Amino acid sequence: MRHDSGQADGPLTLASARVAGATAGGETVTIPHGITVGERLTLPRPRLAFGPTAGRLALASLIVAAFAVVLFATAQANELVPRSSLSFPHWESGPLHHLFGKLTNDPTGLDIGFSTIVLLALIAYGVALGAVRSLSMRTIVIAIVAVHAVLLLSPPLQLTDLFNYLGYARLGGLHHLNPYTHVIAGETHDPIYRFTTWHNLHSPYGPLFTALSYPLALTSLPVAYWTLKLVTVLMSLAFVALVWRCARQLGRDPRFAVLFVAANPVFLFYAVAGFHNDFFMLVPSLAAISLLIAGRDRAAGAVVMLAVAIKFTAILLLPFLLLGAATRSRRLRVLSGAAMATVPLAALSLALFGLSLPNLQDQSTLLTDFSIPNVVGWIVGLGGGAPVLLRIANVALVLVLADQLRRRGEWLNRAGWATLALVASLAWLVPWYIIWVAPLAALGTSVRLRRATVAFTAYLVLTFAPVTGLILYELGIDPMGSSVGQASLSLQHKLSQ
Image: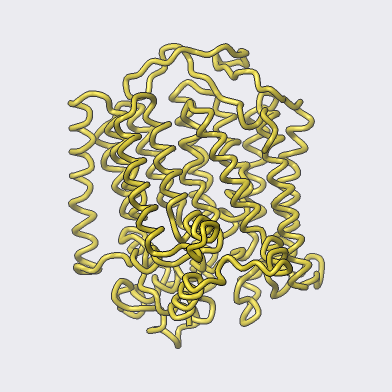
């Protein structure tokens, strides 16, 4: 958890339409003018559309890009794999380690190469969205599964979150220390220690995820590593499958929804390739949406609480599920389901961790270079994400949430805007947080929300590309160079040393 965090009009304006009579939360939406593409589903005409050849080439480009990144990441210790210079055993590097011999590990070359690949992937993403009307679901599924299979062979890229998950698991499951009251520094003689980063940070992860990770502590480190990687990739595929299912339930063409989420370069090169536990939260979140659409309100309320027990962020979805339920009786059923699920989850937390809770405070005060509060503070002369700006961001988030809850319109759109506001308000912003928004934007009807999601994706790709740091360094620009930024870096160093 090192960071626990003008496209062409065609891809940005493409919107899947609803079938007449399809409902979400009891609402009926009229079909906009579109072109029938089969299975009684429609897509509107994009301003710029590509043919099937361009679409297939775009999807193939994503697979090739992933393979290239994995080859360089696995070849030897390098910039792409944090802490690999300290230790890079063969069980971590994976089966492609010797495929092409010793490829370069020049830091500058790899930074430029990775940045170029992700930028090209962003272009391929736009082309794929522009060609979605000409692609079959089978082609899309094959491409998504293939790129997941390639990324499974990679060590965790850019960050060490996966090893931190295992560090907290071994802290509790093997060493019998509560990860909410103890830190990874308490297991310095454990082999996991040299792979982890947040040595003095109490676990910020939810009690259900922490409890589910405990059995991994009973296996060898290589087995635990590959088990968690495999399960994370499978959860990612399950997440994409739920996007497909929700789109079908809503009467929308699932090809657009699936591509909008799963071809996103941030989704692929940061979320999947980083093996982040956000998928463990997103699967029950999307399952709750699917259950609500199907009218299974109590189950929807119960399942969303599983997501909350993984990451507390998921609590933002609950009020919008209540909006989607539409009637008072349905809302009561959602709440009763949530209440019934909360009881055993609270009991599990008390049994394993007592009254201690995940450590969300430390992370909420840390800054990343290009989080919106830090950039705004830097631009207006406050020296970055000063505490007063973080408080303003929190107040703005509450106001946006209240506004979206009182507005009329489809509840998925409103949930998407509120989630986007949450991501934008975070001082500790990391690229893959955009995947919290992507499924809501893909499934909703708001073209503006989809445009905003793609624009924010482009912002994240550009600002977090390693080459951006190189360019800014040459220009003498340091977003973390102020007293505020230095204080944050000092705290990060303290928590990681």
